[in-house]
Length: 75
Image (cartoon, rainbow, N blue to C red; front, top):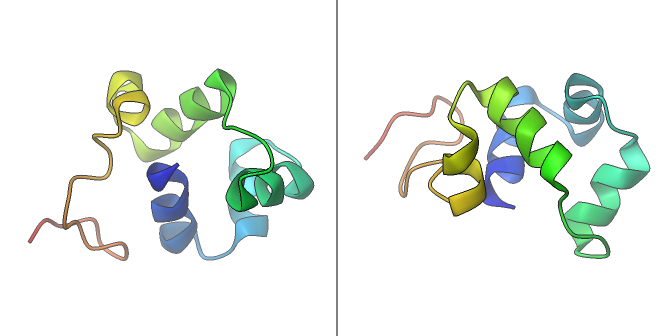
């Protein structure tokens, strides 16, 4: 999930992101490695944390192509 990696950069670490989203670190690690797929609940929490529509997260429209992972600005 691109939005998850984008948020990880913005938040700082996977541990901090897991805490912000309310998930266990092991869950985040498994999703990052592709062991487990991202859940609907995770996508919802990502959309809330990123302040973007849920549909944009699910459709892969967040972050926009070329957005800076540190500030979120477009190209």
